[in-house]
Length: 257
Length: 257
Image 1 (tube, one colour):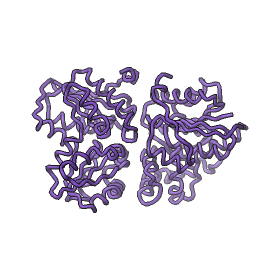
Image 2 (cartoon, one colour):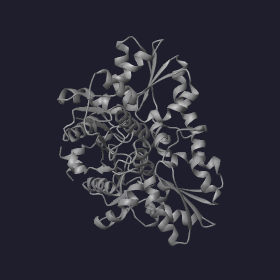
Image 3 (cartoon, chains in turn purple, blue):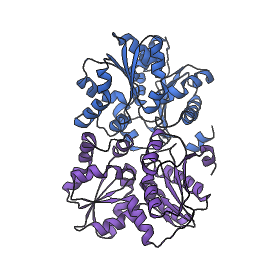
């Protein structure tokens, strides 16, 4: 029994880690499209094409559920993949929204993410259906900050403030981290704004799988595929999920899908 | 008579602007691989493949010289393209090194760029041939800062200091901006370190073309091709080179090259 997790690059490893913890017996296949990362600054059409290729690659392993651990891909390609694949497809949007609805008391929720995620309005649309007032803000510097390992100290504090102060001033009580890299800035955000309830996609997805009653058993296999080698991936993988070897996927294979 | 300029994305527009200014009659074709930007975090093999595709695309317009306005591509693919193409191929490395040799008085030169550019040691090797002592530092946050328009104020000042202080402490008198985005941070760098002589690739290339005696005449045509639409490209294009329309290149075309 197995799950596939797909991300544009590194960030989805925060989801990998959480799923691996919560479902120790499940076989987990991770696909990081490191040769074409990031997706956040690319067009809808391109993100859909890349996401379809990744989903098809993982399907080759007989996965029984697909997690799109990338907000941009979930926003742009989530609905399409759900309609095209014959297994459950879980994006990061619904689980995050569900958790935010449980957290918020004043009905004001902030959403941060890449340009593409914010522009897609995927979180906003779903939250507004439940009568929530939504305040959005793209934070393009957060991903490079995290990949530089600058998650504590003066620079991340100033950058977090630069992006989040206006959301906080709008009176939000809950903040959705709409990008899988952002949980690594959670401590800095909490220090600056201790009253905020923070929705972390990786926990939201694990919660969602439990609540949906999905049960997976297997041999606890873990395999990580990437489309290009990169130092930051290697660094993050080690930090988050330890010594699972990386397996390089040739791009030509993907191009022919 | 025409020149092709190729970059992984936006940054090469600083070169486009300078060449357009210095050679007003030359036809200029720009190719920005915005669907796969950035190259700086990708492997040598992948960067070579992408660069070859871009060079072949521009060759289709009968260009008589090719400028690789991307440090990562120049470092990884420059030599190969020079040997494969039957027109002059000019990377950013040699012009930058030439200018640094003219500037430095104490023989200590700093080089900043992406991870890939620094790791390639392309600048270092060439500078050391002339007996220069080289101090390198990758600055992965500079590109996203520039693309966010954060080129002045407290955050860029702190980030510039975080990266450059150790180079300055080593006693360099000249700094090569080994990435075409970096000229937009030149003012902040100058404010912090007014004694540094700064080598800007775009000026170095225009200088180099003049010194090599290359003369181009034509109709002053300017065409800009991109592989994916993006807001930051549109924004930068307007800021740097005005209202030249963008022409979208289908990726499938490129894949088949």
